[in-house]
Image: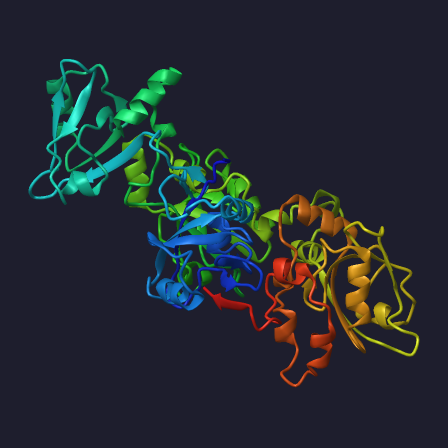
Length: 507
């Protein structure tokens, strides 16, 4: 039996905002599907992918629940929610093999990083009036010092400390060879806060067997109370509304002078926030000028990963970079946001306008009205194989007027994704479309570039909704009923609401 690997993804939204995806059930498909991910949105950046299945919501197993029950469960979570998610292929494989997905035999992955019991953990404790709520002890038959007498609900317990955890570091310094009295002195000198690097018994054995040194850079940050923030900005009339200040000695860049009512203030940037990454690229080793250039390259949009002063100080206490959180929580193979993906070398050399470059890297939605001469193009493809493209566009014809060009790759026809359809299937859809036809296409170089970046080519890239939504309620239903319902329609049409047996919900 192949191992299936659920992911644990936590999302947080601001009041009035969405989590950035649709929850959907579809005819012929099992499970609660993730669809219509917002480009660069919370869900996409956290590692969700089109077709993923939700197994749990805040720990509650939902695979056997109805769509409406799951929707209600998510809505009642407020502004934060944690999902257990399985990829489309793994989910189908598990179902085919009859695996009980409610069991605990799966290997959990938190925002793309494996969360088995083989990672050290960073635990940050802030002393209360009753102390930290733990003791340390040594053992005659085991090396090192161990946590004991962890008070239930106390500071240490809430910070993730467990009884019998072995203490590896205090405030980023190794204490593996220190005496009990020396460690007590170090903790007492730390003042009202302290950072521990701990390992449980299984983790300790695993590192010992692998002969690997236990270090903070290998630890999980999931127990730390303060986390870096992702701030997505859209430039206003007067810019983003903040000043970027450099601290030259440490080569760090900070936010200052946030203007009232500006995009920076609205999206939650704070004075003295330190920038860790710009549009998904780490900047901790970049010069001030390089960071400025990276922000400018984003055109009218910019995605910043930042830490406030309190979070920064917490990581500094443990002598680890806040980028440890980012590395842990980004999925290695997750698709980039659209802003990251527009760095297209062959176009950037010839275009000085980033906005124009972004437009060049989008698909086209072409709406055709048949004339006595037809639609005015040929559909080319190899019979029996996937992938269709436009040829022989008649000048002045319906296709030409709608914006179709030779070698455009066909992505959707009348709201149906046809990337995996063969030539005859696509021809059949076009022939049954009646007097009007709607096609989502992309120039070949754009198509290949977006596919290489693992970006799903949908109407969302051009700010459009689904085929069913862009047509009015008065649109004749005959053309929809006559159009053949291919397997691809239900499997890959990520935003279509044509089928009454398909239900989706926006989050």
